Amino acid sequence: METKTSDSEQQLPKLRIQIVANGPALIQGPVIITDQHGRKEQKNSLFALCRCGSSHSRPYCDGTHNYNGFTD
Image (cartoon, one colour):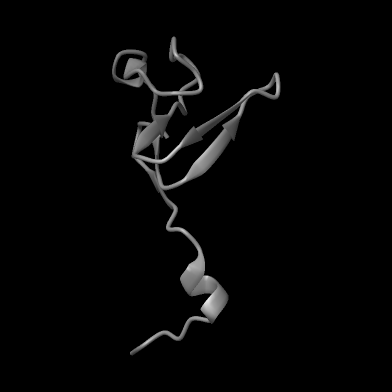
């Protein structure tokens, strides 16, 4: 089965979001992250956002979920 896409959908950059079980949200693609102070940072490659709330480098994941018992 083939899915048809419009011309505007074909021109959009690819953004992929994957939620890792008991871990971070993996984001891949061109995105702009805006923090609570309005500072913006453009990301173009794969990165991980913290979901456990305990990362020392929030909003990015630092692997703390592996030690603090975070589960979905």
